[in-house]
Every structure is written in structure tokens, then in C-alpha cells.
Image 1: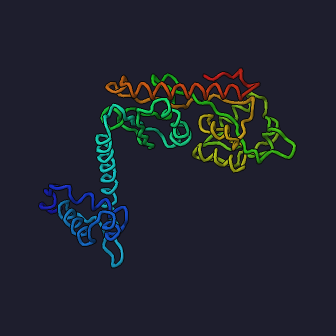
Image 2 (image 1 turned 90 degrees about the horizontal axis):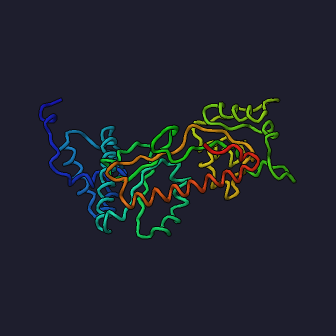
Length: 314
């Protein structure tokens, strides 16, 4: 690397917004529309940024532009930085940070559990403003702009354990023959048994209930529990999935729960808290509400299990 390039220092941030916008649109012209500038002005800002950092961000073609590999990497970082900056400005503009609760959690928990219920939290605490960030990335709650996080993993013995999940067999109502009210354990041999990566949990359930005779169809495996649940929704078979993932689908009648059967699962959800933020009133209120919703979900499962209610949740 040339000495001049190695010693280059980014002395101005003025071109980063133009770069971010051009990277999102893949066009100087469209970026100019968004930023109310001319395409030439956008191009000049990006060119000056490239000169400052010492490498090309775009490959310029006659009718379009394309990010270089280094440009793609920088675009991800700049986009994240600008999102955080805009979120902070919005929060400061809108009022006290004491009324903004920032939660990080997995895509699945955000979509399947939190999002459908947040309206109830807002009714209880209209003074609090929720900012929900769904990501699989492990955030640093202590040092990042997050108040708390909810993560999925092994929860046995975890000090922040929120919920010990349980696997339940579910199926689409479309699998029911005319005049049939529900499927039972005796019907398991009639349909593909959908699973996530391993059949171990299906085998544990089958052995517990003495349903091991006959031929069982394990021809459809998935690498994601949400995909297995979706496959059950569209009628591809009977899926063994965490109740927390499908409880709302069961409530809406999209899926049916096979009563009387479930199996313990070592995974669940746990809190990630920062010592400096855990006692904040907004964090305490949100945690208390989530724990109440989880307790209600657990009681609903026990009621739905019927004859399997003796298989109490961990």
C-alpha cells in the first residue's frame, strides 16, 4: 500500500449521508431526488469521500453504479451508524429518554410473540414509547443504545431465564377428514412428521406415549423451527415445535394442537440485562408485563393439553 493512502484520515463526515443514500438506491439520480440535490452534487460528495478514504466505493457504469466489495462493507457500517444517530435524535427531540424503552430480541420472538401483544402494553403504559429491534446479533446492552434484550437458547440454570419452552405437535385443520373433529396420537403414522434438524424430540414423545409401532414418515426436516411451523400451516404434515412459536396461530385456528402430548425442550428465552439499566422504572415495567404475558401463555398451554396436563411445564 502506498504511504499516502495508508496515512489518509477521514476528516469530514459530510459525504457519508450521500454515500448511504446512493448505496441504498444504487443510483446518484435517485439519491439526488431523496436528498433534494443534483446528481452531480451527490457524485462529487462520493468522489471526495473516496479520495479521503483511499479506495473506490462504486464502480461507475454508463447507466448505473454498483458498490465495490469494500463499498458494500462500508455501506453496512454507515447505514447502522446513521440509524442509531437518527434514533437518538428522534428520542431526544421527542422527549425524555425515561419514556423510551429500547428492546432487542430475535426475529421470531419479535414477530410471533411481542408484536401481536404490544398493543396491550401500550394500553397499560401509554406514557412509554417502544423501540423494538429484531436481530439475531448479540447486542451489548451495557454499552449500546438498548435498555434490555431477550434471547433464545439453553435456559436451564440461566439466571435470566424467562420461559422454558415446550414442544407440541401441531397440524393444519386442512388435514382433518370430513366429520373428524381432531387428530390424535394414533394418527401420527398417517402424515409426515415435520422436525427441526433432529428427530430426537419426536422419538422421545413417541416413546413416552407408546406410539412406536408401524411406519413413521420423517422425510421432511428443516433447519429452522419457524419454517417447520409454516410447513404445518400449509398442510405438509404434523410439526413438533415450541408452543411459544405457534400459540397465536393455535388461538386463531390456523393450527390445531394435538392434545395430550408434549415433550420437554431445553431451550427457551432469557433476559439480557445491564446492571446500570435493570432497575430503571421503564425496564421494570416492561419486564413485569412480559412475564405476565408469558405466565398467561403457560396457563393456556396447560388448559389446551387437557389429558396431558399432568405433564406440567418445567
